[in-house]
Length: 192
Image 1 (cartoon, helix red, strand yellow):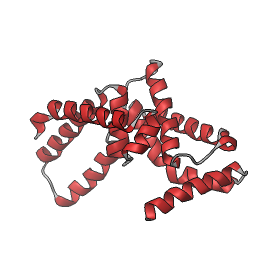
Image 2 (cartoon, helix red, strand yellow):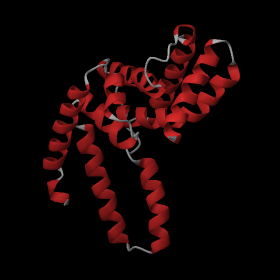
Image 3 (cartoon, helix red, strand yellow):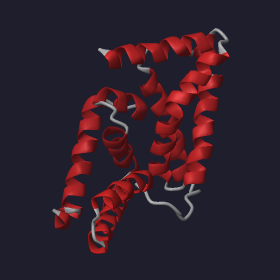
Image 4 (cartoon, helix red, strand yellow):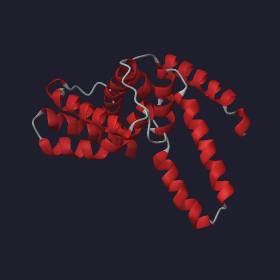
C-alpha cells in the first residue's frame, strides 16, 4: 500500500512539474537520481559516463514535462528513458575501458561489514573474485537481457515496469530474464 502511495506521489509530483513547480522536480531528482545513476553505471561500466547520462535522463524528463501523462508508473517512464540512453551509448561504440567494478557500492558496504566480522584475507579475496565473476557474467549478456536483469535484480522493478522501460511485452521480459538467468546459471555454476 505504501509503495502504491509513493508511486502515486511521483506521478503527482510530475504533474506539478508540468504545471511549473520547480520544487517538485527537485524532489523527484533527489529521490530517483541515485537509482538511475547506479542503473546506468551497471549498464555502461563507467562512473563518469553514468553521471552524464543521468543528467541527460533528468534533462529529458524536464523537457518532456509539458507532455507528461501518468499513463504508466513514473519509474517505468524514467527507466525507459535511462535504458534507451544507455543502449544508444553502448551501440554508438562510446564504451570506454571501465575503471570501476559493477558492484563497487555493494563491495564497499560488504568490506565494511566484513571488517566488523573479522574475516581473513583469503575469505575477502575469494569474495572479491566471485563478485568480479558475477559482474563479468552480467556484462557479457546481450544488451536487453543485461538491462532486464539489472532492472529486475538491482532496481527491484517488476515485469510490467521492465516491459515499459524496454518497450516490449511482459512475456518478452519473462523470456529475456529466463534466458539471462539460464546463461548466468551455466556461466557461474562453478561458484555454487
